[in-house]
Length: 86
Image (cartoon, rainbow, N blue to C red; front, side):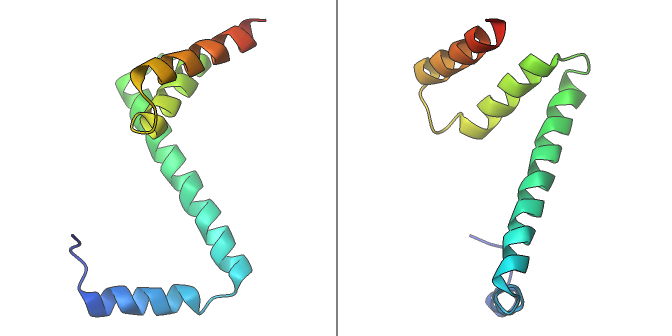
């Protein structure tokens, strides 16, 4: 479900796909950077004194909480912690 009318969506699609592949590629990376900044800032707002390690863990959980089970997430996080503590 979308709140964007179909004719507007089609126009956006036309504009984006009229750009060269390299420009579309760079646009994608810019969007990913923007989303990551939003996620990091929202976590920092909730936890202003969060450590870099805990921030990484919180970002990882935010991105992958629906892709892994809680057990898998915990194993990955524990492996990350063990690797960075060695």
